[in-house]
Image 1 (cartoon, rainbow, N blue to C red):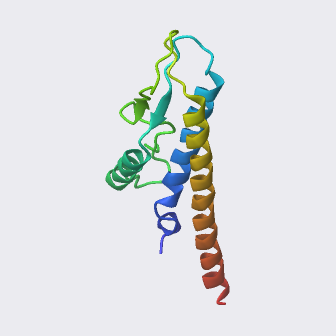
Image 2: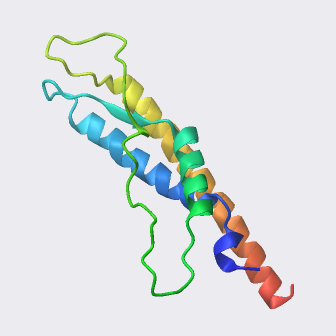
Length: 129
């Protein structure tokens, strides 16, 4: 069993959840900035893209350069469509952003819980419990 395969999709999910939290926080920080366009990601599509990318590109030697992207591809970054446009062109809806941020935080914690369970299982298997 390879250790990098032991965590499954949860590693990519955690990275995407973290990146989404940054986007949502940026939206909230710019709620009063004229012309600011709120951004978000379609988490399901972004995760699917990361899984496909991970499966396609493999390094064969420890000195090879990793192709894993630190950020999101521009195709996954979406603009929010405002429910009520403002006169200054800002598309941030604070209630929507706070709700999305809270939901993303809960999902981030759930992903951490899954990873914690995997780690406990591996530790148990190593010890022979």
